[in-house]
Length: 226
Image (cartoon, rainbow, N blue to C red):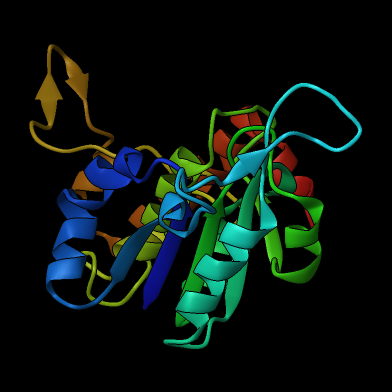
């Protein structure tokens, strides 16, 4: 799988994509993430990528020409399943969308910046708009990092134990149950006996019960979603 990220400030993504799981996935050829500097497609000697709003108002707007040039240069090399714009007024991102996108082959993520993009970009190039929550960031780069990470860890071979991602929170519309590791007792605080029993059925039942209890207490809205 390949994800191309179009950014105004590509340096913000150096860290997230060059460490840990994503780095190892890239080295193994399982997952490729390429960040593109939109300013390389800017206009004129100053590589302009933004301009004032028509009609007045505070904030600069990302221009359509540099974005189209960047997208076209990528499309000339491969076909893309989705061109995704990261914006506060997009659909709220969740695990189900992550699962869906992990089945794609090639994606483009366009990071919003300034006041946003010229509306014609959204009308004629974007296939999906996503938000990571009801708040505003300075740009879409941090959102892109979160989305790329959540997709990458779902790909076969990326995690050491491929079944691990199947039991993450939200995969079955519930939060994950409590987890424990060694020592079995610390400062008088004990691991539940059932987890030490070796009885897989009892352990599975306990985990399901705990996941349901935790979800009811912390995120009851998940249990009422369609």
